[in-house]
Image 1 (tube, rainbow, N blue to C red):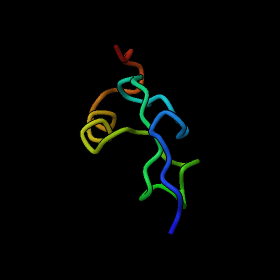
Image 2: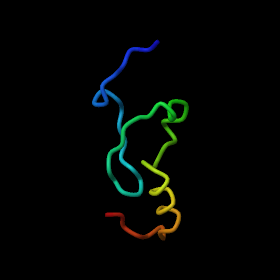
Image 3: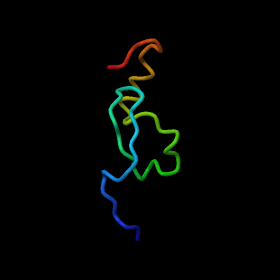
Image 4: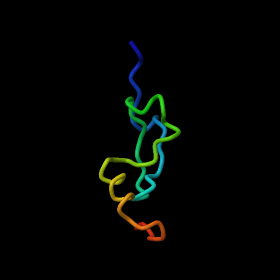
Length: 56
């Protein structure tokens, strides 16, 4: 079994929709490079918002 890591030791990214940082999750292990949004809510908001809108 793998050794436990502290959440602070995991890689982080900024969400493309809300610009908040989010940490790596095990379910994203295979495609971490392609993950852009922190949640389904942000993914949906990004689709509805016009491309020229500025995120807060």
